Length: 124
Image (cartoon, rainbow, N blue to C red):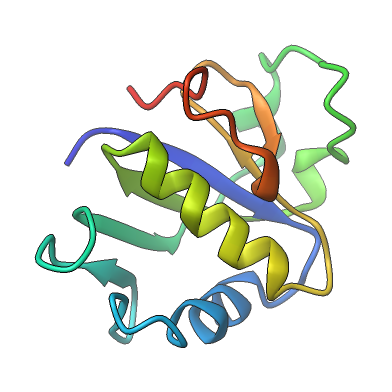
């Protein structure tokens, strides 16, 4: 699976919070090191932690998205090919989180998790 975006938050336990929120949805399968959908009940999906450094963000263009500095945020990879499913998962995460969650797509556009535009989000 090659299409993906990043999930970011200032939450120190982002993966645990994402896992707890998404496991409430019967389409989500929770395993030790990732959360996923096998493609039978929802689009094929993998969500797992990734370590990012300040250097990984060095070339990122500053935008008017309002997203805090990503160098201080926890990061997950969200592999999926469906923009509609990305938006649905984003809404679930935003609803179940006490801290803002952001998605950064393949074009480096930052989206508040509950406001992903399915016509504009880039999943390359």
